[in-house]
View (spheres, rainbow, N blue to C red):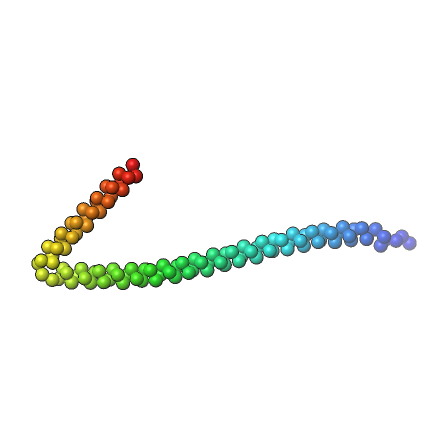
Length: 109
């Protein structure tokens, strides 16, 4: 009878070496995916904290605008002198806006 087990040792060693190489490559890819997942998680936490901060900033801005609108409404409902002052302030603000617009356009060109 022929001895078939003699030739299988070299093939088994070659297959084991190939399996080890593939396992090492797989382990490397898994570690890359793990680090990538960790970075994504860290970035998501940073973005969530940034968005939470923006929410509180918007709430404070809403409070400021609400107070300004109430004061503005009170000024309009009051006497004639306040209306004159309001008109002067409004015209002044429009002029300042156009002045800044002109200055910015001059600086950019």
